[in-house]
Image (cartoon, rainbow, N blue to C red; front, top):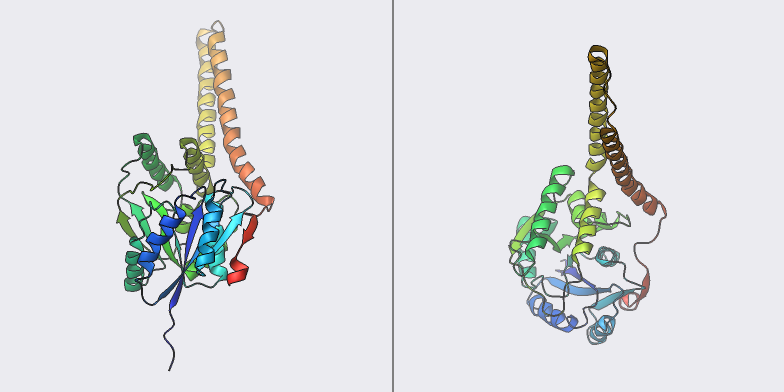
Length: 321
């Protein structure tokens, strides 16, 4: 008779200057996971080059609890790299599931129960959380975020759900598919959608941080949004081609009109203002076209370098696994 083996779940926690939140986060999540039967939970904290006491707080947890693993980066590589490192460690440990969540408790730990329930009932490969409100967030940021999702879904081949966050539970085979995409410039929301698999969504109200401020500035979010769009949409290149063709067609029509006008009524006095305007217009157009093409070429160039997604400074994974 076969033994009833518990399923393993790795909770991946990207951390950047979250020293004041680590202990509260761990206690809150343990309250939820300790009540679960049939699952063995482990933790993979990824210190993304923090400059505060984040790593020290994680090490304290690891000394007290053998289920706590950690990876510390040599510098700040970004949340995308931290999530990849955690997912890779989960795959290497051959975990049945992985859960990604933030250390600031803006991702409610209570939703873990619901995620497990949804996966058990539906058999889906992923259960992801979606914010249905942006309470406590600057209004301009909310407007720009919604605009981004609309543009992204309109011009790319994938669908990114409005309000989707990184908080989700993934099956081992979905984790493997994600880790097998070793691109260095990552946009995980797009990658989650691109790899496919059946995903169920659960909704929650926005929760404010328990301590500290968000590490995402408006400029940082803007760059992240642009990078995500470029990663999954070739539309800007197509738009440049269409606009260039229409401009050329317009110029050809204008040329024919001028030739006919000169043949019928004679040549007008040259208009220097119109000439300068056209030079500036086409100069700006060419610059814009080259800029768009340069963005794509630059991203290709960075990928061909083959640089690692992250560099590990220290970890206890080898000690505990």
